[in-house]
Length: 306
Image (tube, rainbow, N blue to C red; front, side, top):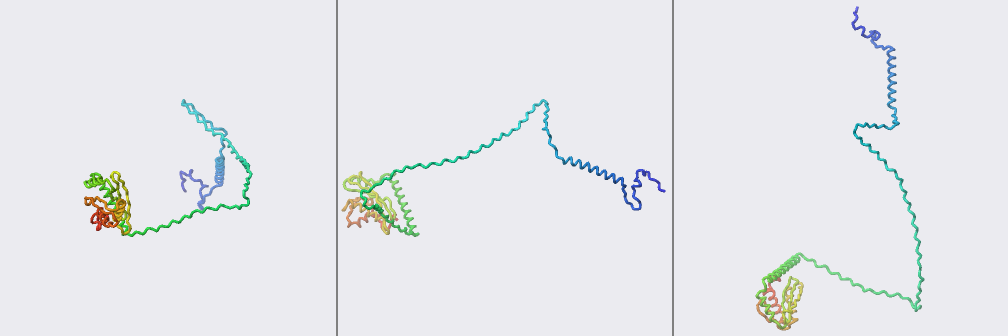
């Protein structure tokens, strides 16, 4: 016989114990009904609580009351809410009135004057148009010849030599002005002052290059104080010597005043020489003046003395 356990009163009752044969848990009907009733009750409570949550909140019928406690500290008055300005109704735009049409001015027409011809049988003729003189077409100038390389180099060298010669003449004139008149210049001036009667003159070369040259002639009659200076320009053609062209122009000036013998004060010789201005003696006069201005070896030298 099995002894009862001391914890038997607190053990599972027999009606809850499964049978030993099938070992299946059996729940009595009373417990099942109580569980269902409890479940329905809780579902009803949950449904009512859910309806209260989903119900929309009602707005308070009265504005909230603000309560201010006076604790001895001055309370700043709340700023008044800014009221929006009253809306001003828009002023309707005035409709443009149509402009009155300007009435056309009444033009007063003067009565036409009828001019009666004195000779009504004469035929009316239009004046003949004046013929304008026809302008002659200007002839087209031929284009300048194309300059080759050698001619360009020669021309540039000639221009450079002319510039050097002009600069040398300016420097010599400045140096002569600084040092004063030389002995020969004073002697020449005394000779000129002594030539009181007749036509006298002084030639001076100003500028010279292979194709152009200029010189001056200072002439006076009977008195050196009445001297008048004139300037001349000469130009040499192709193949001509500019020095000989200038000497021939000087001889032409001499022949304007002398047609026979005349005195020439030679700075090269240092004395006065009598020369002839006759056409038959032109070769001798040209040779003398070439030597006088360009030296005795002018035939073997160029215009720059080289």
